[in-house]
Image 1 (cartoon, rainbow, N blue to C red):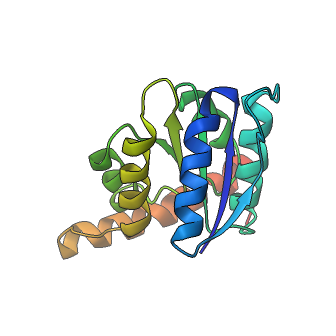
Image 2 (cartoon, rainbow, N blue to C red):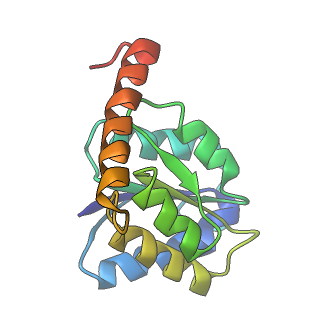
Length: 159
C-alpha cells in the first residue's frame, strides 16, 4: 500500500514517527513534507498535495498532521474523492474506516503523542470499510458510498 504523508511544523515530530513506523511495516511512503522543524510551508499546501495524490489514486491512503488535525482535514476534504477524518484515538480511527471509508487520516501534534499516533495509525490501516457491521448495515454503507459519489459528481463535475 502506498501512503502519502505530510505535516506542517506542528505535526513534524508525529509525521517522522509515523513515517518510520510505516517503512518498518514495509509500506511505500511518499513524504510530501515538511522536512524539518524550521519549515514554514503552510498546512493547506501540504494538505492539498496529499489530497491530490489520494484523490487521483496515486496513493491508496494519506496521513496528515498539523496542530489539531482539523485544518488539514478541512482542506483535504475540499478535494474530490477524499474522505479525511480527524482521529484522536483508535476507536475514532476504526469508525472512520468502517463507517465512513476515510482515505486520509489527520492527526493533531498538539493533541496526540507519537506513541498514541502509532496506535491510531495501525487501527486505521487495519480496518476495512464496513468491517464489523451486520450484513444489512454493510449493504447500507456500501450504497451510501454510491450516493456520495453522485453528490461529488454534482458538486465537482467529476466522474
